[in-house]
View 1 (cartoon, rainbow, N blue to C red):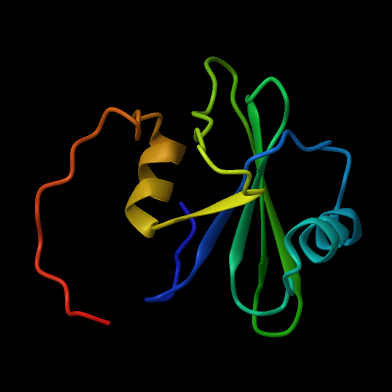
View 2: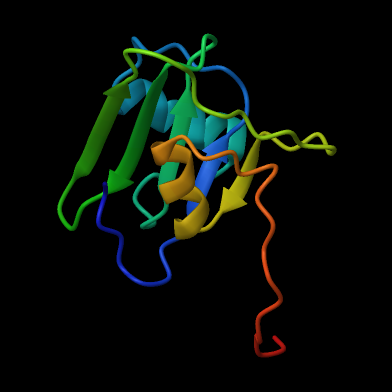
Length: 117
């Protein structure tokens, strides 16, 4: 599991991604498709078409770091979006469930207190 600092933003790219892309190719996707900056501290997640491979790109203090995981069996869950967004924001709990194979769509969250923004 990736150790994330408190408050790290996690963006899940919803379109299938070519897993041959490395730091530069994924950075280009972030800039061109999402209009984001790969060095802003956000963790960016990418899945391949078969959903058995996941790449995570993030800025690690002094450079880009790439984390890659290939499943031997099964698939990762793909998030369904109703809008035409190219990425959705998930939290650290959703990330942990995604990596562990828990279905996020069917999980129910209990009501919790949160401060008004």
